Amino acid sequence: MIRLPPLPTIQEIIRIYGLSARKKLSQNFLLDLNLTRKIIKTAGNLKDCCVVEVGPGPGGLTRSILNTEVEKLIVIEKDGRFVPSLEILSDASHGRMKIIQGDILGFDMSDVVPPEYTCQWQDNTPNIHVIGNLPFSVSTPLIIRWLNSISTQSNLWSRGRAAMTLTFQKEVAERIIAPPRSEYRCRLSVMCQYLCNVSLKFSIPGKAFVPPPKVDVGVVKFVPRREPLIRQSFALVERMNRHLFHHPNKFCFKSLGTLFPPDREDLIWTMVELSGVDAQIRPFELTNEQVGQLCNAYATIIGQEPDILTYEFRSQKSAKERRQKVTKVLALEQRL
Ligand code: SAM
Image 1 (cartoon, rainbow, N blue to C red):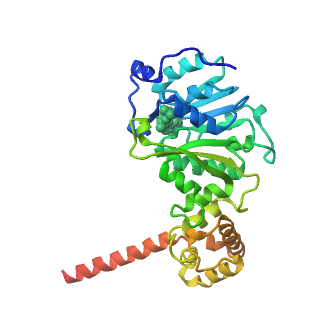
Image 2 (tube, helix red, strand yellow):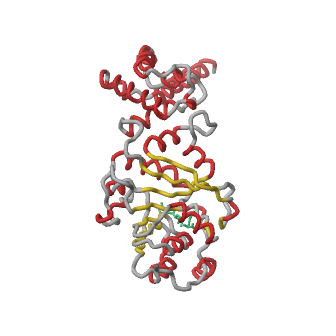
Image 3 (cartoon, rainbow, N blue to C red):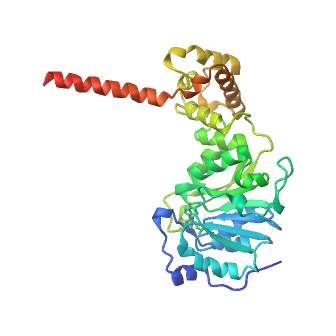
């Protein structure tokens, strides 16, 4: 087993290189190596694995990854200030670690993970794992992008059902795993759960980070499903959820109404009939399977009337608001 040689502590690295945390990049460092070890244990057995770490910063989690039998570690860090301190780890890693300075948003991880790690989608998960103490500012847009990639088996997921162990603000973590009827149930819950098995492994108090964020943090593991629970395009599922959860506590037919122009209310009832979902259930009570039934019904309607897909409730609403505003201004002008 390869172990890292004695190295300066992360605190010393931060001091030597003057690595003060930058708020703009949501930098909150985890310096407690017991916690970084716990996160890595959560990821599972990394023996012979290729790991991609997002946002290594000064390298606390990175050290714990290198202290496993990981075969290859690729770290992707936006802030160039960390590169010299990461190079110390890379030099000590017996050639296992590669540093990439770049922005993870828009980065194709399949460009850096060698093809020999590939498994077929229907096989067990490949020896590839994504790990990150993610910056809060990018964690939600990033997971949405990656879910989209999972749905099309692109980006890293062209190499198989690579699992992810990631940190989120505790409340976001609660939303990701929320079952039907939970107070946290929302669009993000369905989007994550229809494509992945998700589990909240443990929480870390905000005070464990430097500087401490105002919120606690949840460690979530994602394992892509062999078969998604909803068999429609990511864009359609996303659109359905956006409309459904606009009013999570109102009856479903209210939310479904926002998918159709006001003069096509009949389609709400067509959709209810086709899906078999009770119109008086509330969106936060819907199971992932019921959302799937609604998506299938919507796809059938769009198949028959493609123009429906271009209807945008919000722009209709803002057009109405604009008209109201113009009327008000005209009335005011008349009074003057
Ligand atoms: N992994 C380190 C730890 O646990 O102490 C640092 C975690 S800190 C919350 C987030 C890290 O992500 C920072 O190092 C920050 O520079 C980096 N980061 C922020 N935005 C990024 C992006 N778009 N792409 C890659 N790295 C990013």
